[in-house]
Amino acid sequence: MKKWTKVVAAVVAGTMLLALAGCGGAKDSKPAAEKKADKKIVIGFSQVGAESEWRTANTESIKAAAKEAGIELKFSDGQQKQENQVKAIRSFIQQKVDVIAFSPVVETGWDTVLQEAKDAHIPVILTDRAIKLGKGNPEDYYVTFLGSDFIVEGQNAAKWLLEFTKKTDPVNIVELQGTVGSAPAIDRKKGFEEVMKDHPNYKIIKSQTGDFTRAKGKEVMESFLKSAKAEGQKIDVLYAHNDDMAIGAIQAIEEAGLKPGKDIIIVSVDGVKGAFEAMIAGKLNCTVECSPLLGPQLMDAVKNILAGKTLEKRILTKEGVFPADVAAKELPNRKY
Image (tube, one colour):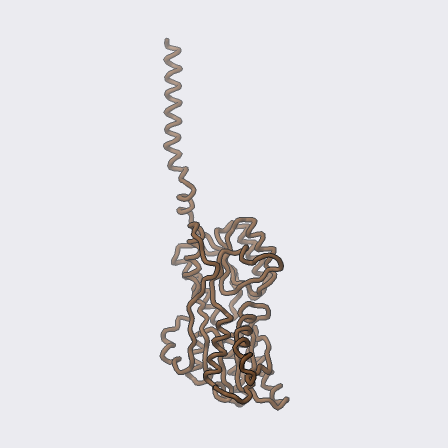
C-alpha cells in the first residue's frame, strides 16, 4: 500500500510541476506579437552624404524623428559613394535590423544588395530618391518610396519661368544638373524640358553637373560664363537643380561683374533658408520646394510595416513654389 501511495504522490507531484512550469512559462513565453511589441525597433539608414543644406536638414529630421519615436537608428553616411551605401546595407543585413531605409546616390546598381535584403526578409524603404533595376520590377524589392516628385519640381520651375519672363524672343538658359545618374537630376531635367518643348524660343544652351554642391556650382558657372563670352552668347537664365549650386553660381556671376537675379534670372530647387536669404537680397528669383523633413513620415512607415499594415507604394510630400516676392514673409517659417 505504501508503494502505491508513493507512486500516486509522485504522479501528483509531477503533474503539479508541469502545471507550475506552464504557469511559469506564461511569464517567459509571450505570444510572438507581444514579444515584438516589447522589443525596440531597429532601423538601418544609409544617407547619400552631406553635400548640401537640404541633405543636412534631411539627416537631422531622420535622427530627431527616430529619437522621438523611440526607434534605434543605425546611421551611415555614404559620402556620395554607392559602394559605401552598399557596404552599409550589407552591414545592416548582418546585424538583422528590423527595417532598412536608404536614399540611393544613383538610380542603378542595387540589384544584388536588394536581393540580399529580400532573402533576409528585411523590408526596405526608399527615401527621397528612386531606383531602377537591371532586371525585374523595382517595386518587388521595396515596400514604399517616400519623397518628392522630381519631375513635377522640374515642371514647376519651368512654368514659373515662363510666367515670370513672358518672352517671345530667344531666351538662353544654362542648367546646373545634380549628381549624374541620380533620380533628382534625371527627373528635374526631364520635367523642365517637358514644359519647355512647347516653347522653342527658350533654349538650354549649356548643361553640366554641379554635383549638388556650392563649390561645384560656382566652378561650373564660371565655365559657363567664360565660354558664353567667348562664343558671343548672352546667358539669360540659370536653372539649377538645387539651391546650393545656385548659391555657388551667384558668387561666380557677381565675380564676373554681373547682377544675379537681374542680369541673369535664377530659378532653383529645394527651398532651403539660404535660398530665401538670397531672394531677399535680390540675387535669386524663385525656389521650388523639395522638403527634406521626411523623418516623421519615415518612422510612421517603419511602425506600420512592422504592424503588418499595407502601405502605398508612393508616399508623396506636400510642397510649394516660392518666388522672391514672398521670401521675406516666408523665411521665418522655414525649418531648414
